Image (tube, rainbow, N blue to C red; front, side, top):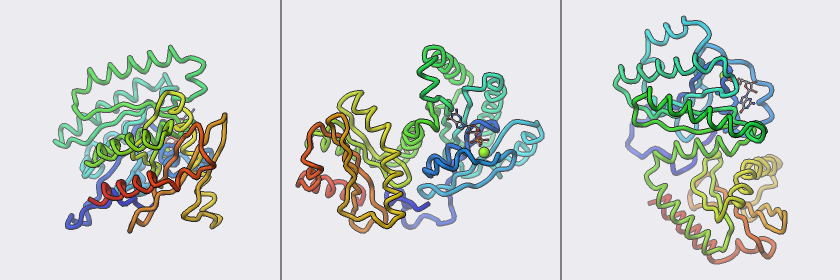
Length: 321
Ligand SMILES: Nc1nc2c(ncn2[C@@H]2O[C@H](COP(=O)(O)OP(=O)(O)O)[C@@H](O)[C@H]2O)c(=O)[nH]1
Ligand SMILES: [Mg+2]
């Protein structure tokens, strides 16, 4: 997978230094599925082979190597990696620990491994960001047992914070059945490392108002959300539930060779317009994408507006500066 420009490493940095994003947790927690969801290879999720045991390097995202590493099963795994920890942990910038919240019988085991991993970081005197995914937080499930599952997660969350005395700790609830949860989590994590993200967000807020949109999301090809602005919960729901599918539809058009620079995808639903459009910056290899929601719009002609061009220019300046 190609990088998006804003994450290109600065010139002069040693090229061989690859930062790692480590996905870890018990086998069956959902690591491979999450990585595939980022690829937008949803159709393949059902066919996944189990990747038990060995660490497997999966793909590169934004100049970072993503690898997956199963814990659990036999203690022998634990022994082998704890004996040679630097092999697994060196250059780890972010460690994502995936907990399957649907498998109550293994939660204890999972927490045990989490604490081992954190101890190891401390011992090695490295301080990657540690991110906990409370995974399999499925939309259907939330509908049926929302209160119970929320309080269980909250209790887990508290327990982890109490036990893991670690500053760079973050929590997300994710599900492959709501791809936005994964996009959102990965974006938050990666944008933490991107100094210009705040300025970008401010620009997006301003532009959303100027264009009189109900909401707006800017994403890149890797499903990373660079910024978003929503007028209310409804617009947030409408845009966040659909962005992954607009990107996928765009992939399909691209694969058929139908994607053209000036094109946009317009969907009218409930009297509102969803407008999806690539944003091509000067000298950037890959476009970014905008998904906007408007309550009235002359057939997407809005994007020909000078405000839109002004935004593209500003966006361009921020990314290039
Ligand atoms: N309900 C539900 N099942 C999931 C989710 N993510 C993964 N799974 C399932 O969990 C199983 C294990 O997933 P896998 O990605 O192979 O786990 P890994 O061993 O951690 O790589 C598979 O059957 C997946 O389909 C999710 O968000 N919700
Ligand atoms: Mg796996």
